[in-house]
Length: 214
Image (cartoon, rainbow, N blue to C red; front, side, top):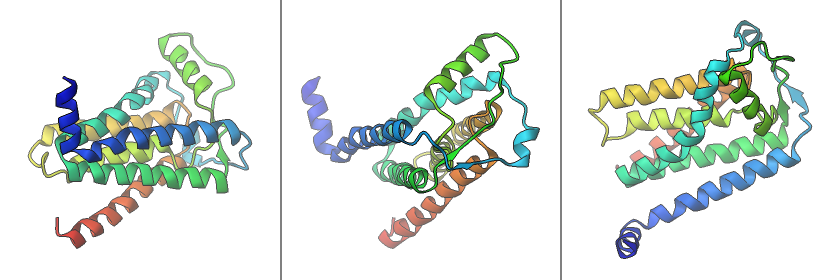
């Protein structure tokens, strides 16, 4: 088993980058979450007031923490170029987000003062609020990474005719983005900025792909 893994890594040295990139991501995320606790700019959009709190979207918000690494592993096994492109968009995007959190510390005041109900959804939501502060929110990492995963499935040549899979992934990513709004973890501004960031980075990736003739 170990010899097979060593052989596979020798044939796919780019795979070694994944744990390194994820480790750096987590280090930066928790460091900023610990040190950047005083937002300078409180974000609000009038559309935020029209979106009701709905605790049942907490499940979609929570599932992102599994989808994020699993999508990277899936593309690692699927195609080298797709994997490297997705890594570029996700981790370059995360770098931009982290820099934005330092230069323009943002926060939210959207969470309800009292939880209106007591059920599984609200308990899960309270747990999320406990571990995920309403600071460092724009652009939204949840949304920029979700957008990257959705867009990469449509760009992948290996998935060219898997329309059902691409549609299912896109719907799930959109539900995750909507969840950030319904559980009051992000503003409309954060979601829009997250998607715009990933679209911009995919534009850069596409220019690089054409330059290489891929």
